[in-house]
Length: 151
Ligand code: CA2
Image 1: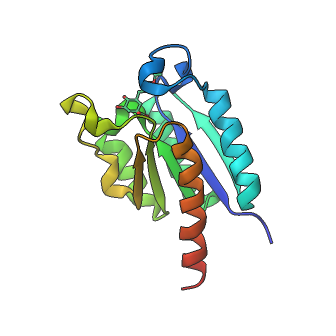
Image 2: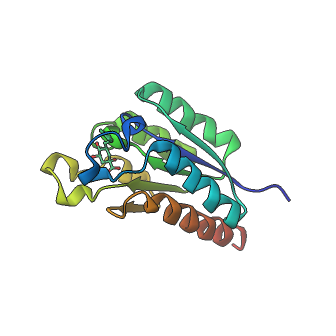
Protein backbone atom coordinates (compact mmCIF):
# COMPACT_ATOMS: atom_id res chain seq x y z
CA UNK A 1 0.00 0.00 0.00
CA UNK A 2 1.16 3.58 -0.74
CA UNK A 3 2.33 5.65 2.20
CA UNK A 4 -0.05 8.47 3.20
CA UNK A 5 1.22 11.87 2.00
CA UNK A 6 1.33 14.67 4.56
CA UNK A 7 1.99 18.24 3.42
CA UNK A 8 4.20 20.15 5.86
CA UNK A 9 3.66 23.80 4.97
CA UNK A 10 5.59 26.75 6.37
CA UNK A 11 4.72 30.43 6.11
CA UNK A 12 6.65 33.67 5.85
CA UNK A 13 10.09 34.26 7.33
CA UNK A 14 10.54 30.68 8.51
CA UNK A 15 13.35 30.46 5.93
CA UNK A 16 15.28 32.64 8.40
CA UNK A 17 15.03 30.09 11.19
CA UNK A 18 18.36 29.64 12.99
CA UNK A 19 19.72 32.92 11.66
CA UNK A 20 18.06 35.35 14.08
CA UNK A 21 16.12 35.37 17.37
CA UNK A 22 17.50 32.04 18.69
CA UNK A 23 16.10 32.94 22.12
CA UNK A 24 12.59 32.69 20.62
CA UNK A 25 12.92 30.06 17.88
CA UNK A 26 16.05 28.10 18.80
CA UNK A 27 19.09 27.40 16.63
CA UNK A 28 17.72 24.85 14.17
CA UNK A 29 17.46 25.98 10.55
CA UNK A 30 14.53 25.20 8.26
CA UNK A 31 16.72 22.54 6.58
CA UNK A 32 17.17 20.94 10.02
CA UNK A 33 13.40 20.99 10.49
CA UNK A 34 12.91 19.33 7.10
CA UNK A 35 15.42 16.60 8.01
CA UNK A 36 13.68 16.07 11.35
CA UNK A 37 10.35 15.71 9.53
CA UNK A 38 11.88 13.29 6.99
CA UNK A 39 13.34 11.11 9.77
CA UNK A 40 10.05 11.12 11.68
CA UNK A 41 8.07 10.36 8.53
CA UNK A 42 10.28 7.35 7.73
CA UNK A 43 9.70 5.92 11.21
CA UNK A 44 5.95 6.45 10.86
CA UNK A 45 5.80 5.16 7.28
CA UNK A 46 4.51 8.49 5.95
CA UNK A 47 5.57 10.43 2.86
CA UNK A 48 5.97 14.18 3.33
CA UNK A 49 6.00 17.18 1.05
CA UNK A 50 7.86 19.92 2.97
CA UNK A 51 7.54 23.50 1.68
CA UNK A 52 8.04 27.12 2.73
CA UNK A 53 6.82 30.34 1.13
CA UNK A 54 6.79 34.03 1.95
CA UNK A 55 3.74 34.58 -0.27
CA UNK A 56 0.21 34.25 1.11
CA UNK A 57 -1.39 33.33 -2.23
CA UNK A 58 1.16 30.60 -2.82
CA UNK A 59 0.47 29.08 0.59
CA UNK A 60 -3.26 29.15 -0.20
CA UNK A 61 -2.70 27.48 -3.60
CA UNK A 62 -0.65 24.74 -1.93
CA UNK A 63 -3.45 24.15 0.58
CA UNK A 64 -5.94 23.90 -2.30
CA UNK A 65 -3.70 21.36 -4.08
CA UNK A 66 -3.72 19.20 -0.94
CA UNK A 67 -7.39 18.41 -1.53
CA UNK A 68 -6.42 16.13 -4.44
CA UNK A 69 -3.08 14.79 -3.30
CA UNK A 70 -2.57 14.70 0.49
CA UNK A 71 -4.10 12.87 3.44
CA UNK A 72 -3.31 15.60 5.98
CA UNK A 73 -1.73 19.01 6.49
CA UNK A 74 0.78 20.08 9.12
CA UNK A 75 1.09 23.85 8.90
CA UNK A 76 3.09 26.57 10.59
CA UNK A 77 1.39 29.59 9.03
CA UNK A 78 3.82 31.96 10.84
CA UNK A 79 2.59 35.58 10.62
CA UNK A 80 -0.46 34.60 8.53
CA UNK A 81 -1.74 32.72 11.60
CA UNK A 82 -2.84 36.03 13.05
CA UNK A 83 -4.07 37.78 9.91
CA UNK A 84 -5.36 35.46 7.19
CA UNK A 85 -9.05 34.65 6.84
CA UNK A 86 -8.22 33.59 3.25
CA UNK A 87 -5.86 30.90 4.56
CA UNK A 88 -8.50 29.78 7.06
CA UNK A 89 -11.08 29.48 4.25
CA UNK A 90 -8.68 27.40 2.14
CA UNK A 91 -7.98 25.06 5.06
CA UNK A 92 -11.68 24.68 5.88
CA UNK A 93 -12.35 23.76 2.23
CA UNK A 94 -9.87 20.87 2.22
CA UNK A 95 -11.84 18.64 4.60
CA UNK A 96 -8.48 17.16 5.63
CA UNK A 97 -7.06 16.80 9.14
CA UNK A 98 -4.99 19.91 9.88
CA UNK A 99 -2.43 20.27 12.66
CA UNK A 100 -1.22 23.81 13.37
CA UNK A 101 2.33 24.08 14.71
CA UNK A 102 4.13 27.00 16.32
CA UNK A 103 7.70 26.75 17.48
CA UNK A 104 7.20 29.39 20.16
CA UNK A 105 4.37 29.56 22.69
CA UNK A 106 2.29 32.26 21.01
CA UNK A 107 0.24 32.69 24.22
CA UNK A 108 3.29 33.82 26.19
CA UNK A 109 4.13 36.45 23.60
CA UNK A 110 2.65 39.77 22.46
CA UNK A 111 -1.18 39.97 22.63
CA UNK A 112 -1.50 40.18 18.81
CA UNK A 113 -0.06 36.64 18.59
CA UNK A 114 -2.65 35.17 20.97
CA UNK A 115 -5.35 34.86 18.34
CA UNK A 116 -5.10 32.38 15.48
CA UNK A 117 -7.57 32.44 12.58
CA UNK A 118 -6.14 29.10 11.46
CA UNK A 119 -7.02 27.27 14.69
CA UNK A 120 -10.68 27.22 13.66
CA UNK A 121 -9.71 24.80 10.86
CA UNK A 122 -7.25 22.80 12.96
CA UNK A 123 -7.91 19.39 14.44
CA UNK A 124 -5.15 20.21 16.93
CA UNK A 125 -2.57 22.85 17.76
CA UNK A 126 0.98 22.33 19.04
CA UNK A 127 2.87 25.37 20.26
CA UNK A 128 5.82 26.23 22.45
CA UNK A 129 7.68 22.92 22.12
CA UNK A 130 10.30 24.16 19.69
CA UNK A 131 10.91 22.48 16.36
CA UNK A 132 10.15 19.12 18.01
CA UNK A 133 6.51 20.21 17.61
CA UNK A 134 6.71 19.24 13.92
CA UNK A 135 7.68 15.70 14.86
CA UNK A 136 4.86 15.52 17.42
CA UNK A 137 2.44 16.81 14.78
CA UNK A 138 3.41 14.00 12.38
CA UNK A 139 2.91 11.43 15.14
CA UNK A 140 -0.51 12.90 15.96
CA UNK A 141 -1.38 12.98 12.24
CA UNK A 142 -0.58 9.27 11.97
CA UNK A 143 -2.98 8.56 14.84
CA UNK A 144 -5.69 10.67 13.19
CA UNK A 145 -5.34 8.92 9.84
CA UNK A 146 -5.34 5.45 11.40
CA UNK A 147 -8.43 6.38 13.44
CA UNK A 148 -10.18 7.61 10.27
CA UNK A 149 -9.34 4.36 8.44
CA UNK A 150 -10.87 2.31 11.26
CA UNK A 151 -14.15 4.23 11.20
O1 CA2 B 1 6.31 30.30 16.79
C1 CA2 B 1 6.06 30.15 15.59
O2 CA2 B 1 6.33 29.11 14.97
C2 CA2 B 1 5.44 31.30 14.80
O3 CA2 B 1 4.50 30.75 13.88
C3 CA2 B 1 6.58 31.96 14.07
C4 CA2 B 1 6.18 33.23 13.32
C5 CA2 B 1 5.38 34.18 14.21
O4 CA2 B 1 4.88 35.26 13.45
C6 CA2 B 1 4.22 33.48 14.89
O5 CA2 B 1 3.59 34.40 15.75
C7 CA2 B 1 4.70 32.29 15.69
C8 CA2 B 1 7.41 33.98 12.80
C9 CA2 B 1 8.28 33.17 11.90
C10 CA2 B 1 9.51 33.96 11.60
O6 CA2 B 1 10.63 33.23 12.03
C11 CA2 B 1 11.81 33.86 12.16
C12 CA2 B 1 12.87 33.07 12.52
C13 CA2 B 1 14.10 33.63 12.68
C14 CA2 B 1 14.29 34.97 12.48
C15 CA2 B 1 13.23 35.76 12.14
C16 CA2 B 1 11.98 35.21 11.96
